[in-house]
Length: 328
Image 1 (cartoon, rainbow, N blue to C red):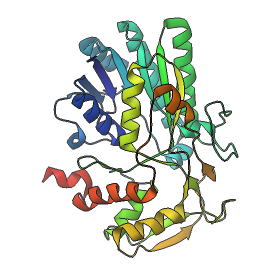
Image 2 (cartoon, rainbow, N blue to C red):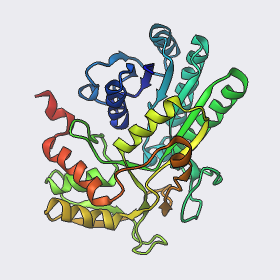
Image 3 (tube, rainbow, N blue to C red):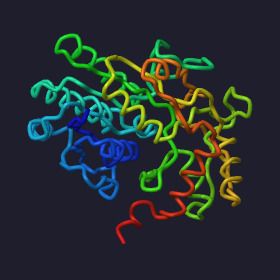
């Protein structure tokens, strides 16, 4: 069934890939994005771009009335842990306040179906080998808190206003397609930082702490490819179920393993130095992904770190200046 879908943050890293999947499936897509942290060059041809900010209530109200979508996929948010620790108010104002405006606009136009880009950061540091959807949510940073707050607000809209929300709690999004890759400013994610070092764009990569209670002392993360994330959004768009689903491959890799694997994939020396920990980082975040697999019918296809890094390496090698190079 073809649908009209409004995508907030469709010029971003995951939003761009999901938009491409939606269009390829025959859906009609309107992107609502302020382009503050996304890229106009990452907006898929065929999607209508409405430039606006969720903090502007009138702007999202108008966009919702004009688009009259069947569903909303909500990506737009600030998403840097360190930045959220330095400026919590900015995160709550954007991620929560803007999110409320989105829910109000949906309610005003009778749009009930919502797929929300949430995060494993809502769990904080649970101290478990694998995190399931019923693991207590105790965020350790304002970014995670802002995602959890929106989940809870959406749950009240479900109870009181008939909203049909699905929360997709990503673990570490990574990888690339031939068209779309990771290009943030500033960049804080380990895989693009390592690959930029391999390209000579950085002198070295920093390993933020090597004294965590993990086998090699560095943080362990569950790395999930953006194509697998996009496929999960497609399934969530039509599911009869509501609530949360963890999206990860079900096992983790350490920061040191990422650096070592990138050296093998690129065939290039990658200098690394140990720096102090980043505030708010839990030692280990790995998904129990059984619910998404059994209930949504989702299955991740990129499950090996080498293949994930290889896809990202191809994009970074072809786009050494990120999307800026695409403008020339």
